[in-house]
Image (cartoon, rainbow, N blue to C red; front, side, top):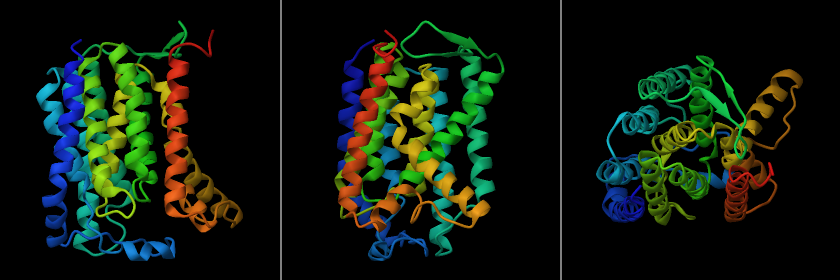
Length: 323
């Protein structure tokens, strides 16, 4: 595999994201695409009201140009397009409804799930046509379990879970952009070692795009990515994990996202069954905010956790734990 395509994808996506920011952010502001802060969110977030959102469009434009230019075409290419940009489309509709109706909620949970399910199934169908194996491999070992048709149900579940876990993580300036760059970085290493050209170029393009976006999204953020960006990032990340045959590494490399989603589940279940909250607010990054941490401290701590988890995932992939 020609590694120069990967380097070009990172560089071009980063440069495009940085170049799109100065004209794109004022355009979003003129279109009145302002953030609607949730009513029950931290009071410190009220100052974010009206900050341009749907910046995920900038991420997707930058990543798309780099991916289309440098990736080999084939069913794997189109499967990644479906997973990332299909989920991004669901997020775009959700963001647009929030803005059009000036409310903090867009699509209903069922509508969002239905949209994600459609694109997850289409992603799996394309992989099936491409002859993708249906066994679940244990990273770093020779062990694997043949799942047959059950594998596709698992793959759909992985995309849905990852998309929503990543979406929950997008709540603080720069939090998701930084943690997703680290997670994609780990899977880039894996995809390159597996000699999977489309997955490698896609991961590289996403790294460049989210880091370019981080230039404008770091605290204090000038723009938010919205569900357009977060769902696309999550759908794409789940797709790369499935495509490289490292499904079991996803909860480790994407551990920050898993904890964010788990905190929401625990909070909801506890409140519904006991009438009590476990956290001051979920997702868990808000819990730390309400515990007195500054936004920047929460973000940098989660970035560090993401770095450690990405490294742990690569260690497991290399088989060091299994030795």
